[in-house]
Length: 378
Ligand code: GLY
Image (cartoon, rainbow, N blue to C red; front, side, top):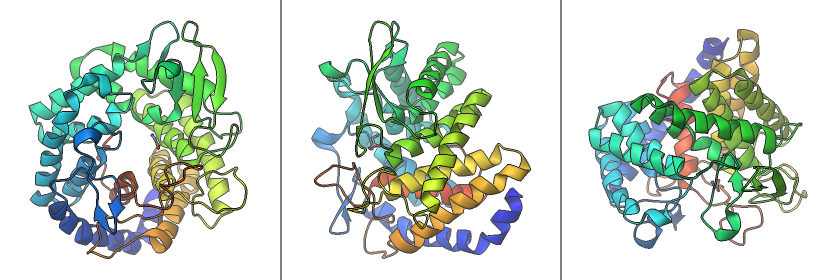
C-alpha cells in the first residue's frame, strides 16, 4: 500500500524535490555566512552574535545536510560544516543553553557525524546531550524546559523532539541512563501533555519535589485547553520517534491518537493547518510549520503500522504537503525562503505568516522521505 501511494504521487514528489534543489542550491551559497531564522524582504536574517543560542539555530545546518544527503552536492556539505563551526560560539556560555540543545545540535552535528563520521561533530552532539541530561529533575522526574526562576517545574511538549538526542547518546556511548531519562520524559508527556481526545497541552507546570501537575498554560496557543497546532505536531512526530528508538508500543499508539485529531482538523480546513485548532474562526491564522512537522510524523507512522492502516497517514501527509506546496511555497529563486506562512504563536503581535527556517527544514525532510530515503535525521 505504502509503495503504491508513493508511485501514484511520484511525479509531484520528483518535481517538488527538483524545485527544492534548484532553489536551495543557490541559497546554500548565498547564505553561507549566516545562521538564518526568517527573511526580511526575501533575504535571510542572521542569528549570530547575541542570538547564537536561539533554539532554531541548528535547522539551517540540518537543512543543508538533508539536501546533501539527497543530492551529493558538495556545496550543501560546505555550508552545513561551516554552520556547525559558527555555532561553536553557542557553547561559550553554558548558562545560556536550554532544553532545545537537541534541536540545535542533533540534526546538525549529529547528522554530520552519522553521515560523514566526523569526530568533532560527534563530540558536539554528545556535549549537547549531556547538557540536556543535566536538566533532569530527579525528584520530579522530568526534564525542565526554560531557565527562568519561575519556570523550574515547567515542561513543554516541544521537548519530545529533543529527546531523540538522548536515545542516540545512550547507544553511542553505551550508557542506558540517557535513554531511561528520555523514556521517563515521554511517559510523563503521554500522561500530562496529551489529552484523552488526542489534543495536546503546550506547557505543564509540575511540583518540583513530587512531579505532580499544578496547572497547564496556553503557551503559544490561543487559550488554556485549546490546541496549538505546532505543539500537536511536535507530539505527533515526537512520539513516533520515541517508538522508533525504543519499540514501546504505547508511543506509537499515542502518535496515532494525536495524528487522528490533527488529520480531522486539517480535513475540515482544506488541509491547511491553522495555528490553533480551537481558536475563534476569525482572524484566520495559519502555521505552515505545523503542517510540515506533522507530515514528517505521519509518514513515519505509515511505515510502522499494518498495511491496511498505511493509507490513513501517508495520504494525509501528502494532502497537507500538496496543499501547502500550492498555497504557501515560494519558488522565486531570488528570495531565500521556501515555505511561507509560518506563525510563531497565536497571540503574538509579530511573527505571524512569516517564513521560519524549520518550516523549510521539515518540508524538505518530508519530501526526502517520500523520495524513499531512509535517513532518519532525528
Ligand atoms: N519550540 C518552540 C516553538 O515551537 O515555537
